[in-house]
Length: 204
Image 1: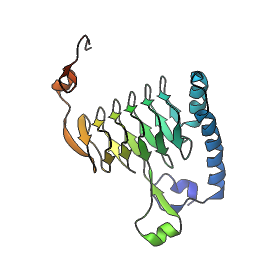
Image 2 (image 1 turned 60 degrees about the vertical axis):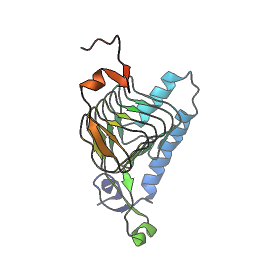
Image 3 (image 1 turned 30 degrees about the vertical axis):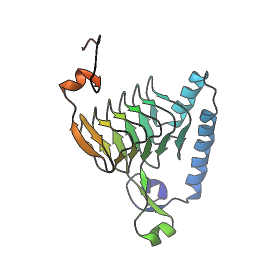
Image 4 (image 1 turned 180 degrees about the horizontal axis):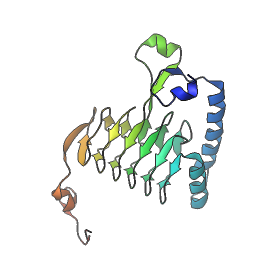
């Protein structure tokens, strides 16, 4: 089995494959171009991301700087996804993000990991597991999502949380390690923040 095949099936492999490193370097050169665009170059930014990403949906946007060790090559964004400054994707395998999901500053989505055995790490082994984030989620500032995690549709992950296990749809989850605090409910359709009421919104 080739190293390229092992990228996407969770098997241990040694990342220092010359062919893959050369391919990766090309994506990183293009990512450099994205991160050095001017604020007024929105169309150029979008064109670069559409070129780099596996999928980059309509009306999605990433605020530079953006960091990705494969340049986003294995990242799938739905439509209307927004990422604030310093989104980091360790995209050695696939990362899926559903429509209208939002990322605060300094979020990390890490699909790659290393074995606990130090001798294997010394030899350069790693493994990758896909990350799947549903539609309409919100990940607050500084959230870290670990390999293999799924976050269900509509869920909110509080700032600074470290997500090591799956999060169900429609919940508020916080902490390190991240745990479900409560379900999202009708109160959240009345108040947008603490006791601040939602006013003038027409629900369809």
